[in-house]
Amino acid sequence: MIFEIDRRSVTEGDVVEINWQCEGAEEVKLTIDNGFRSSEMSLETSGNKKFRLNRSKGKTHLTLTVKTEGKEHHKTIDVRVKKMPTIKADTVDNNGKKMGLLSQWWQKGMTNWHNFMAKVNLALSALPERKQVIVKMMTLLGVMLIVSAIWPKAYNFIMVALIVYLAIALIRK
Image 1 (tube, rainbow, N blue to C red):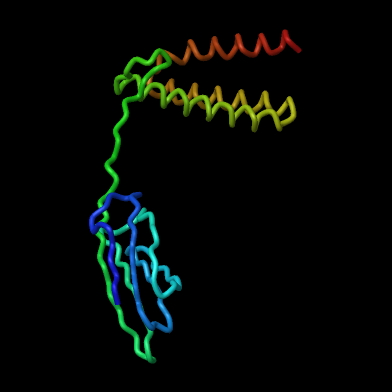
Image 2: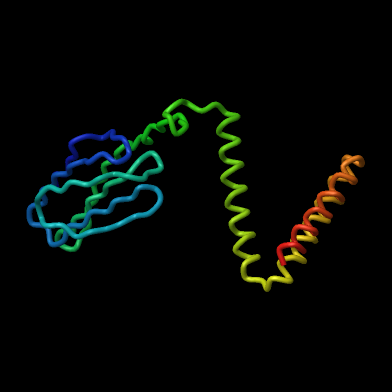
């Protein structure tokens, strides 16, 4: 039985080529075990095949099993599979300038805020108009309570803002 591989050390995603020759074999099978899963395939008695070795737990075992005269013979080749190097990219703004950590944090926060508000507006649009006003009032009162607990002088400002909001809502109707 001849079983060879073109290289025994690769990086994830590389292609390897195996060659085999098993004169007088009744059955030839190849098993590929990358540590996560194992797959098996039947082969001709001789030939060559190329494989891309993607995911591996460090070593991929290629085992050629040959059945001759009722007996099985095995030959295993281990291929060391190195992880693909991680590429670190910088975050850039719309002008192509590198963004600092604070800018990245702010942009992510604003994206999350806009997504949240879009979901809130979608949920509100499903409610009848009167219930929309009630939800907005309850939200405003909740914010008022939280802010006034932290900063008591804000209570008067928030009450004035609430009165202005209600007056505008009445005038529009």
